[in-house]
Length: 212
Image (cartoon, rainbow, N blue to C red; front, side):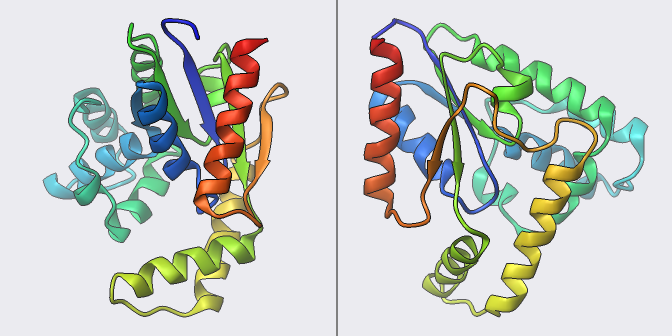
């Protein structure tokens, strides 16, 4: 295995790419970056300062201040922050700033795993291994519902499914860096897999690519 590698993981919400990214980073002793948190960090800063989400100048200022080494997943995972992030992420200047920061992260000597929507296509087109992790919208909605219920909450399956479909349409239809698999990405459909099976399949792909 090379001393320093970059693994790019893309895919729609709820497909399991975040969990796979964490497992692969631990297994191969690589740094980890959930690039979605970088957009959430910008949105969170705007909310905290009371700045409008569509204020481009303030959004750019916030993007420049984001520190990729200090992203609080617990704080940034709040639903309101996620909704705000979807509005911030469409600002081209913000995307440009954060993509450059993400590329700098990918170049660290330790090697890195990055997961998001445009890692293999835009952020790290030269990544050593590219995975596109997907699952049916219905499966992803059920996973989200189970997660909510496991944490003591309640939700409506139909509402979650509709939200996932809308998010997919927004991610795949945006003009700047739309969600799509890179031409050389390895597709991994986790619809019929639990996390252990998905991790084993992902690891097999990484080992095969790096060993070739």
